[in-house]
Structure formats: C-alpha cells, structure tokens
Image 1 (cartoon, rainbow, N blue to C red):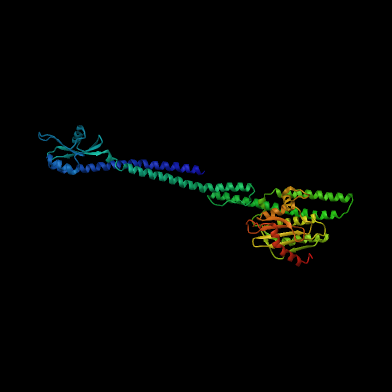
Image 2: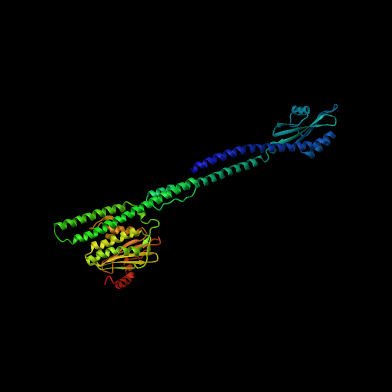
Length: 467
C-alpha cells in the first residue's frame, strides 16, 4: 500500500510538472526572442530620424556608430536622382529580402548565418525607402533561457521529491497501524494475552483496532474464566482426595482396605493428570491477567480454616504468622489458594501424622514472601524436587504441587526456593514480586535463611498454636 501510494503520487506529480513546465519553458524562450528583437527595433528607431534629415554617408556612419556597432547594424540607402546606392555597415540579409521590405513598407525578420536580422524600412526626405538592418545573434536570442529552464527543472524535481516524501509519510501513517494490527494478531495467536493495538491512524484502521482490542479483552476474559474453573477443579477434587486418602490409610489391613487404598491412589493419579492437562493447555502468559490481585493474608486465613480441621484429626501442631493485616499481591485469589492447597497437601501426603507445620507471610517493600514449612524429614535433593515440579513426575510424585507454585511465582517475576526450615524439615519459599521488576538475586540460599531465621524463631516462639 505504501509503495503503491508513492508510485501514484510520483506519476501524478510528474504529469502535472510536465504539463506546466513544458509550456512555460516555451513561453520563456519566446519571451527571450521578443526581448532581443525589441532591442533591435529600438536600435533601428534611433537611426530613423537621422535618415529622414540627411543621407550623407559620413553623418550616417556617426549615427550608426552611436546607435549600435558597425558589425551589428547596417543601413541600405537606394540610389536617388541618378546617384549611387549607399550601404553603411556589414550587409547580412539577401538583396531580395531587402527589396521585399522596401516594396511592402513594413519590418520583417530573416534568418542569416549566426542569428537573425531585423529589416526596418525608413522613409527618406526624397520619398525613397531606406532599410535599416540590425543583426540579432543566436546567443542574444537564447540569453537567460538556459538558466530559466534549469530553474524550472529544479522546481519540478523539488515538487516531485516533495510529493513522494508526503506520499511516503501518508503511506506510513496508513501502513503503520495496519502493521501493528498484524503484529498484535500474531502476538495474540502466540499466546501473549497482553497484546493490544493503539487506536490511531485512519478511521477505518481505528475501528479495526477497537474491534481487535475488544476481541482480545474477550479472549482474556474467557481464559480467566477457564482459569477459575481449573482452580475450582483443583479445590474441589484435590482437597477431598487428600482427606479420603488419609481416611483410607486408617482402615487397617485386609484385602478390602488394600483395594480401597489402591482405588484412592488410582483416582488421585487420574485427577492429577486431568488437572495437569488443564493447566498445561493454557498459555503461561495468562497467569497474570490485567487487574488480577488479592489479599494474601485473607487467603491464608481462609485456607487454614480447612487444613486446621484436618490437622487436628491427625494430631498436627500448626501455626500462622504475618496474616493478621492485609497484604496485597498481584495474583488471582484462586491461584494463591491453589498454590497453598498444593503445598499443604504435600505436607499431609509426605510427612507422618503428628508432624507440625507453619505458614508465614512476610510483607516487604517490593515483594511478598510466603513460607510453608514443616517438621518432617525434609527434602534431600531440592534440585530434583524442583525438576519434578517442572513436569517430570518422578520419585513417586506427580510434581503438580510445585508446578502450580512455580507458575504462580514466575507470573509476577518472582521465584520458588526449597530449603531447610526452623522446624527441622522442609521450607518452601514463594517470592512474589509486587512491583513488576525482576527479583533481586541475593546470593547463596543459606545466607537468606540466616537473615530471616531470627525473625522466624521469635515469631515461632510467640505462637500459641505450636508450643
């Protein structure tokens, strides 16, 4: 479109320039010719008064010398009363041309070598007709024509270049919004849900951009609804399955009990597969949708209402710290609840009954840290555990819990780390970035634990739920 518009403007401007420049150039040439012959007529008119008074050769030569030059002007006086014809100056015109001017009695021009001559008839006192010949060289006829044509050509080229530049800018103004619309469509097709198109340019492209942005908002909303459904599926199935598995473990020995435990395990594996498939089917960029956010402290308190009841059934000591005041994070409420359920479910699944656990919320200037720790045997290989969290599903674990937590943290620019807790077992640290910046790397993981350990121990000792 851009080059087509440039070509059209180039063709139209070139035709306009040619249509005006060619006639104007011819007019300039004719004006230069008229100027040259007008000067020649003035020179001839300067001699006419002298011819009407006298025909003396000496006098006429003086007049010719004062009016022009001997090489550019000539006077042809016919023979009068038996006298001789007088020719003053250099004759260039043919005799028949001079005779024709005498006969007709009006001025005329004729072509000669090196230019043209103006033949002007002048009546003498005797009644005869003298002819004044003024030579007009070609250089004088063309004087200034080349410069004028060069100026016309420069103006024409400037007009063409200017029209091309204007057409190019107009083309960019039209093509740039179209390209942005195409790029936005490609980005949205690649799963970049934040892709939007500026609503500028021509009215038609503005309307197209408005329609595209509206469609993208609808896609984001649909994916948000899907994400809510997936989180709800996780809450509705994973948590009751954990309770069912724990109850099945208390059935004792026997074929029926073994079959029940095997059925529960098989059901749990199938549910994990379904949930993992639902999460992997969605673009990762949907993790942080525009406007998503919740109160982390409120979500922690809400989920601990459920898990505390299950902890009392198994004789587990528990504690919550840092959830007594609002802590805003840029994460959807359902996503944070799913991550907490995944980590607490792992505690109940992989530690023995009676093992204590704790949930701590730390609110910083640029990040919020959620710590889930337990007093179990710990994780001997945190790197392998995180690898399972990325989908390997080895070592008797589906890896779904850590995968949910990792996606939650990385959607904000944060990360997840596994270490040793003050309770003696595993501590999972969820770093949630709240200002959209990349997380600050703080060196060795052990140094981070030592900086926070004093605060955790003091908070731990003040807790009434975990003596």
